[in-house]
Image: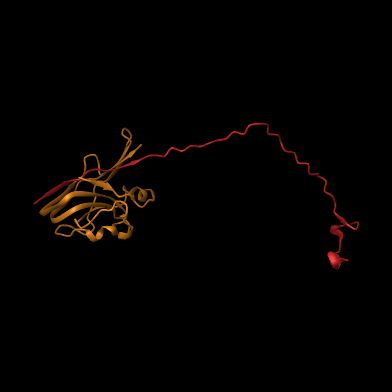
Length: 66
Length: 144
């Protein structure tokens, strides 16, 4: 004995969820920022000597330095 | 008769676990002891214990032949289709047909696609057990 069964269609839906992009435009004047930091570097000194010239053996601080 | 996709099918397809074009897609027959769970059942290991046995039926079911996957731009529908499936000279009693991807190596990794509920037990006796897929396709995914 033969049997024939008819299958219904298997269905699905698909949709792309609507997405939104927000761009906020800044208003007002945008002034260029100019650095005021001096381009000429100061030479740091201790007791009249530049730091780079201090002998490392005497590079003591605090009570020991006294 | 009710035919439904398993809830995880599209997820598995998007995760590249199902390739309808190139993978072996099979349809297995299962008994009325099986209770489909569209949400919880995702791999063949959820179903295999209820598979039918009988003359003319091999474990795992039959491969879908002449598979096609097309997109109809007029209706915005993706259609997965195949030739009708027949177990010839068989003696089988089945309540459900379950479609799955048989390419992965284990039942625990073979994703379920969908199932057809015949509504009641259907039997063949030393004859053909044929599933006639819907004329509009086996699976239709409408893109909105």
